[in-house]
Length: 443
Image 1 (cartoon, rainbow, N blue to C red):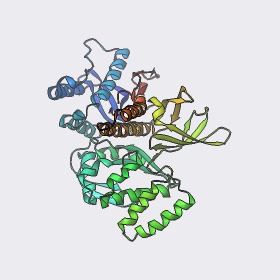
Image 2 (image 1 turned 180 degrees about the vertical axis):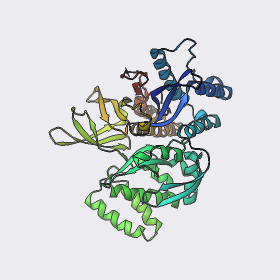
Image 3 (image 1 turned 90 degrees about the horizontal axis):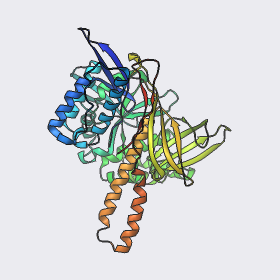
Image 4 (image 1 turned 90 degrees about the vertical axis):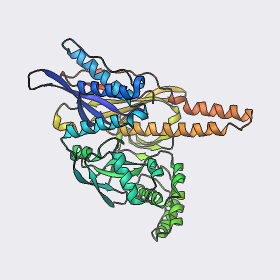
């Protein structure tokens, strides 16, 4: 699936001997990731082609005449599309030529050399695991080390991920973004200092039933348990009074380190509303009318919202992912000031939804738009994996049952047919600053 690479900002700079060049600010998940020149990307593309051949998408051509503002904007747009397309192939994103290129770019951008350092990784219960790392270690490497320290088997590593988190003074927890596997957590953390972020470990799947895959590992059960407790404490999940009483009784027994009660706790909490969902910070939306605000939970094949209307009435709404045809993330603003480029940008996510047998666009104005988009993609990938497994199970089925199951599968994956990319460019007063709309496609 494509990564959320965008290039909303570029700078025209002058070299020592007077010639000019353009430096592109490459954002990942809405945050400044690195800065890069066309020539660097061109050389990297040559390296990729030597390894992967024609599977590498076409690279934007060189301009041999003086570059006008419109040509520069076209190139920026083409480079962004190229970077998104090149990340579709996991064999490329997992390769040394991909990882080493972005490792160097990230370190050069933030002027952090490879050296020994310590990195704190926070657990959901507030405990800290301090790691001795190299500043050039990727998130995949850091995650592997921290899970090994906790006794988690390598086979289960894919169920967890590192995230940038924010603790607010009012006790609210915000998930800022997921750390990409090839990203350098130490470097990214330095670039996001002004946001007061920390790195935490959380499970990374949207289907709560996948908890069952981890029940055979004590370390994994502990991680699920402390995250469930945190989500109850932060009011991310909504147990009834009866459920809460049972959970409190099981928690008392579980605190005596009895594994059986940990498992029973996790089995019961799966029945609680919004368990296993990602909660976003309160945001604005235009459903059912303009001027609404919403608390958004996403998971288990739905976007569950508590919407506050302009009349101060509240409305509970569930948007089913199976009714989402496509979505897009839009930069509503980005800064050209270097000191602001690590900060949050103004974003919106809009999706086309089948509401009462008619299609309409629904918009959420949220700084966590890329995180929400990542959750959409995760739900889709999990559903496709589940569908593939069901396909295999159909092999020995009678023909009558096969046809019925096939219809179910078609309805499940209909929303995966994304419409083609469409760009809307907004020209600000500054020549080198471009804001644009990015549509998810071909995931």
